[in-house]
Amino acid sequence: MKINWTPEAEKTFNQNLEYLSNEWDNVVMNHFLDRVEEVLGVIQSNPKLYPLHRPDENVHRCVIHERIVLYYKIVGDEAIDLLTFWNTYQDPSSLKI
Image 1: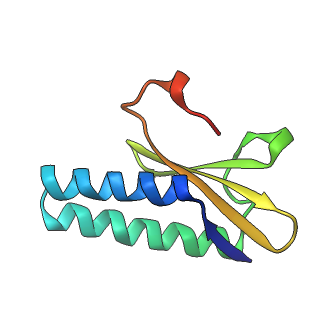
Image 2: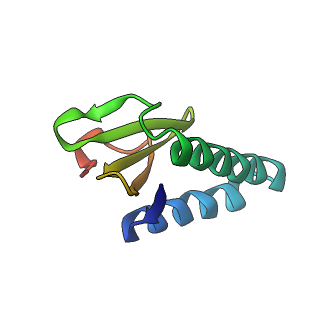
């Protein structure tokens, strides 16, 4: 399946990277990058593995790190849209997916 990065996913991914590069060392940042790469590979080969967050919209939830959750949507039989890399420190009411 093809993975599509939405503008929101790109923005939130980069925000998390920027935070890690400013507040932590390269080891932590590289671990995050490796984990994202690993998870994207799993999602690509088995998109229904992670639990549904919104079953009626086919939105799944994958914990990347205890503080970062990836939300993605399976679109038909061909594609997966990455929706956002949600930092759990944020106000949950502001999550718009």
